Structures are given as structure tokens and as C-alpha cells.
Length: 257
Image 1: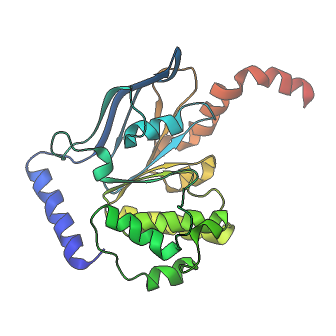
Image 2 (image 1 turned 90 degrees about the vertical axis):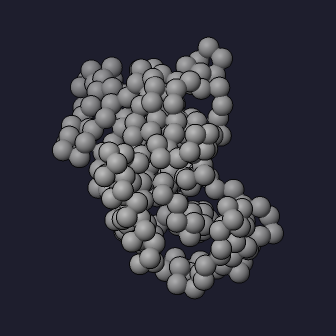
Image 3 (image 1 turned 135 degrees about the horizontal axis):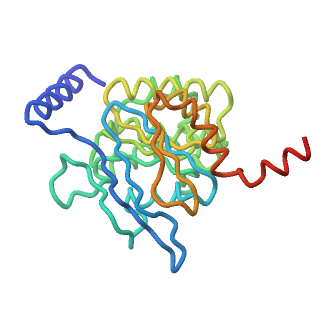
């Protein structure tokens, strides 16, 4: 973040504290059903600036549905989704970037053109990309659709970082990356958090979440609401998930092993 932008952010946060306000991305009592199948029931969580909030759950627990509701890709849900300091009626996506599980790229667009398209769609100038290109090792002048899965994930992340949005929602960002890229991504996320970005992060790798997150929300299919774990309670997160997801199988496991 440029020094002037960092100073502006700190002044904004100081004014909010002075006025008793706390900026956050707030999800309150969100429920969503497809026909008679209720996928989410009364889910609440808060994403604060300068924090990483992990979101975990088995397939079918509603993680992607929740993300789509937050970002406005799903309608017909009940509950509240808002950025608390935004003017009334402001869409969450105006302040938030989304990295989907499988980023989509229009055909015949180079990586450089894709980044430019994303920024221009938000009315933002396209910065020089040479430094990022060296860091992420992306062939920006090749067609994005020809990238490997890992390069596509890094390209989509680059387009988000370049927009300098206050909140990011990252759905399985480590998926498809090799060890070297995983380690680099983890450090990028730490530094984004350090400059004040709020990050909602999903991962099937529980260790990735607990290593990075300040708190974790667990969704369990068929159960209302969610369970929140601050960092101090991460030690019981795995045991709780095992009990919630596989408790009925432990007797069988005892017989087999």
C-alpha cells in the first residue's frame, strides 16, 4: 500500500473509533433454501478489517452458497449482509473482491488484459505489473485460458490485490498450487492482513486455516447456525469437527483398527 493510502486508512480508522463506529463486513441470521432443502440456517459471522476469518465445513455444508449470498450471486435468502460503514443500498461487492473456487477467464484474453479488464470494470487505473509479474512468475502476455490451474489461481488473485479492496473473499485459494506457491500465498495473505484488509478464507486444509486465521467459523450440514472458534480454541476445532462429521463411524473404526 502506498504511504499516502496507508495514512488515509489509519486516519479513517481513527475517526471511526473516535465516533464509536467499527467498520466490518457483517452477516447476520442468513438462511437460504433451495426448494424444501435448507442449506443455511441462521448463519452469522463478522469479518473485521485487518483479520483473516476462516470458514470450514464438509462438502454440502453450505460454504459456497454462503459466499455466493454474501457477494450477491445468490438471491432469495433471508438475513442481513452489509458493510457497516457503506451508504444504505451499497452492494457488498462494491467493497469486496471474490476469488471463486474455479476462476473463469474469457477466451482470447491474455493475463495482462484480464487484469486490466478487472480493474477497468471497477473504474480503477491499471498499475504497473512488472513487480507482481516477477513475484508470481506469470506469463502475462499469454492467453489466460492456456494457464495451468495454479497459474489461473495466481492470476485471479493478482487482479484482486491490484484493486486494493478493503475485503477479500477467497474460496479455496490454496487449491491447485504447488508447495512453493502455497508458502508464498500464505505470506501474501499475512501482509494483506497487516495493511488492514479483511479476508474471509475457505480451505479443506484445516492446518492452512489454523496457521493463518484469527478465528474460524465451522458450518455443519443439517445443523442450524455455526460454531465460532477464536484462535485460543483452535486446539479443539479438529476434535469437534470429527465428532460432528464422523461420530457415528467411530464404532466401526474401533472394530476395523
